[in-house]
Image 1 (cartoon, rainbow, N blue to C red):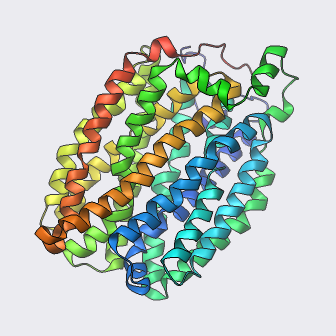
Image 2: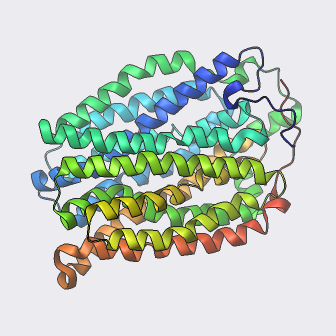
Length: 439
């Protein structure tokens, strides 16, 4: 499964007759994922004016930014994914894009905690159908020796969307009002949906009729996928390990802008620009590095898909500790750039490994189960946990309580690294070997 015969460019795809179509699909998937993360993370930079306008506590902010989104995003992802394993993934993702964009706009109408909590639930419902189908579609159109890099490019939507959401939200909230940030971002997604439907076509529509064995796999329910994964400990170790890292990762996405405002006394606009730069530069560098290393080293050892992010997670801890403890805003920004990159190295390797553990017809469902675990723990627990800890530490640390809550959160990266080291031992045994897709 080496890359000796692979085309030199990443986006050439498997269908040699229509490389332009493959590239256009990849570009559209990236744009939609970028909007996904703008809609998901814009609430982090808007937390400051939302808290002031609606009179929320840090605990309520954490619930709004974490649990409200994670409940339906995680819970509905699995049945939607099973639907996507059998039907048109392009159509399912189009409906998801339109729904989450609509509910993002509705967030701007909220007048109290429960209204914005309900609107964030709606965003989660929409985004439940956006990511797992894209993972499986990308895995269908790129060969195994380039899959981690392709998934890494798709994952650029995380830093690009997060940075864009934070900067855009900060600018709009400063110049106009936080509600207009939700209105504008939601409208952009609604306008994109028809074009997305036109460009992103499920390649299975052009494929020959499936064999009886493949058709039986397609008819299999979620129980069959869970039964297969139950025999693969590497999947569960990867999922829980990634979840531990996401408790800190998503928590920082949400809380770091507030930390910069509170601890350094800078304006909301300045915080958005600083953190946006950290996410954009560090995020893209880390994601691409992880994908490249996984494609190169994964050919020789399946365990590399887990070992690469494990090493990166351990390396994040001292840099986060130094950056969060810094007394100068410029020193903090410089130090936080490195762990931001290292903390996102896992995306290409682990997502590619999840695709490799199951047959083609189960990839979307396996991805959704992975995302269920990752997001329910990462977003649903991580974001509110930091908020709760910040409230708890306020009595002893006052205005610096959020700084200390984030420092304690770095322990999650150590737990993530330990779990991935165990996962590396099982990956070769658990891998689902099948012939590389033909042109």
